[in-house]
Amino acid sequence: MAIMDTPQTHLAEFAVRQNLTEQEARPTLHQNSRANTLATIADHMHEGDITAARQLAEACLVAWNSPEAQQDTLTVLWHHGNTSRELGDAEAALQTHVSAIEQHATIETNDTNWHTFGTALEQARLLDLKMAGKQVEALHRSSLLADKLELTYLHSNTPNHPHLSSARLQLSDSQYRMMAFRDAYNSSEEVASQHEQQDDDASHLTLLLARAKMARAQRELLDPIGAQALLAETAPQLAKLLGNDHPETLLAFSDLATTERALGSPQDASELRMHIYNRFRELYGESHPYTFSTQSNLAIDLHRAGDEMSALAHGVSAYEYAKKSPRLSSHTGMAAANLAAVQLLRSNRPQALTLLMEAGMHFEETLGHKHPSTSDVYRQVNAIQRGLVADPNLDFELRVA
Image 1 (spheres, one colour):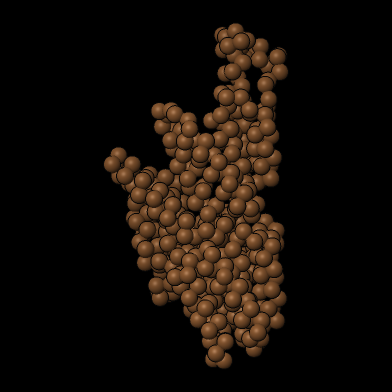
Image 2: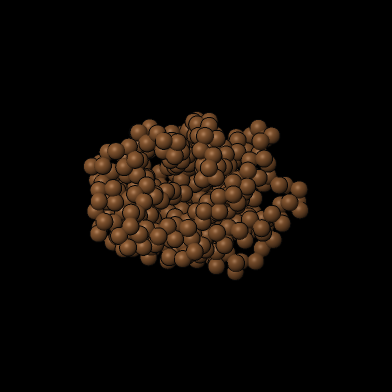
């Protein structure tokens, strides 16, 4: 695939076919080459070949330095940021997408597709914020974007527009992370209701994603039986549509594992989560947030199932990998808090206290001092310091998405 200007022979052939002079053909052909290259990057992303997508994107950023390539260059920046996030560097992805958003705002055009691309950049930033653990800002920005798109698409009588649905599901994610479970359920249910009567593949996928998010909120609203039924139906359908190893498929099954644990079946939960952990480890490596967050949750499953040695080993491993990603502060906090729960059951109160204080610091930084997880951690700290019995069954679900 050409990235730089095409060879002279190719240019001459193209000019003849288009009935153009070579001078007229050059910018047109170069633009077509850029479009084909962007399509190739998108194909790599869709196929899961993140490394190939990133290498091609980086080549384009070097090659496309002319003013007429500015819009295509911003599209490459969008892809490049997405590859950073998929490779586990959410902070780098965030910096790239913020830069692209700022540059996008300087380009004046009436092109509807260009304004739509601005929405894609905003949604990419939301994913970066959530993976980077910046949940308060993610909730604020996702709410603003959903309101903005609602005004746009409801007034144009397209309430099930993909961009509006995506924004609402991202808002549901942020509400869930901030433990506003009723709001998270309602946001996802609204999307599901808009797509239930649609029969195209895209609407079916949106419906399944909305139902998966409804189910996890339903579990936290003290209906684990209903959540289990919905996830047991939805997760296999996601696997059929997206593939067994797609992150959304694996995360839906991870939510099912958490629900099994909530229903008193930690052995079933640990077996399912072990499979998910192994898949993430093979696909992304030990240090990716998908992997170590799943491993931290696996430690709690094993802890509840009574396998304390395995629980401790996985808890320590997840915590160590989380610490190596200092920019993922809320994830480090959750891994520390979950390891503390394992240490408490082993009566290692000094180590548990140190871990809980670290978790509280991370939660305050990323979630705020009023967040329930922050309060729960400091309640545990206070109980240990006063010589009271702390709750070893308090756990903190890590979900990266």
